[in-house]
Length: 80
Image 1: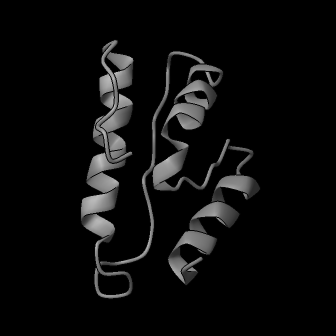
Image 2: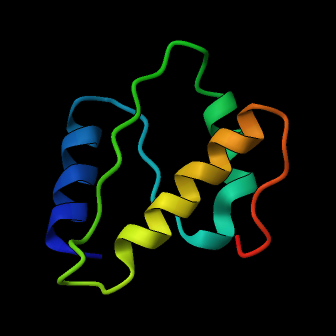
């Protein structure tokens, strides 16, 4: 876990906000978790920089896209 991710998790916890760390294989479970949080959500996406973790942007883009596809009733991408 990067220092920025740890900071984000700590701040969310200190403000009594739900927080979840997500990996590429967690899309379906994360979608279910989000559904249980209610309908009025503000989602903060944080994680390591591309320079700290090559591929971070692509992985994050895919995960968010898959969550949006699930929300629209479609299937996530094959690589998720």
